[in-house]
Length: 298
Image (cartoon, rainbow, N blue to C red; front, side, top):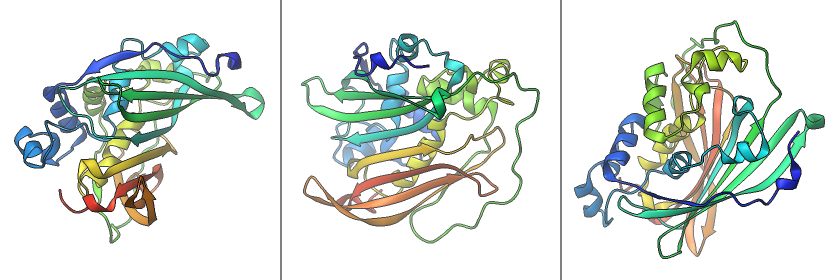
């Protein structure tokens, strides 16, 4: 049971500075091929002061902070029982290599379902620049599941070909997921959750094997956007983790325009996004809001 009295508790603030080498490594590990995220000359030619942060990288900075497990320590929740349910980003402006960013996390909400069998932790973080101006707001929804018996079974393998690509935005295919890839992503992102890199730990937690970080799939999904729009055009990105991506799975990502909206006076498009494995089984769904003025330029 979660200690609901901790709802609204501020967590320890911290600061993080990003350098170009770290951003290049993250881009390499996630297959980000837009040169604006790798080549400073390209970034400056596009009007940026340095390499911009990829869409999901702010979450990685938070995981690499001095106390990434503080929320679970405060709630006395075993990390092996936690799964990432949702991740939301609201972007106020781009952040760049060389900046020092300030993170202000808090436990925004706590609730339970199924008679307390499932707990939900809503963890919000305001990210600010050195002058106090807002850079982004992050919202994570973590699911606390009951303790599971140790698994003695192998993870399922999907072998059916994925459905053919549809017309519309660029399609991204990544994988197959390997243990080596998960180790590289842990280093690039700062997310060293042993469920993703330690087979024995994963099996003791009831999983058949290690499995992909949800935010690795989210980074693949975000590449649909970065192949199609300028980084500064992205206003919002939300993802929901529907199912586990196993070792050996491919990640097939695509999006479609779902509607139009106005965000802070700018005409924008809303997108529906999804990632599935090679069998066409949905692993991740999401939405994005992109300013129309920044489309089609990468």
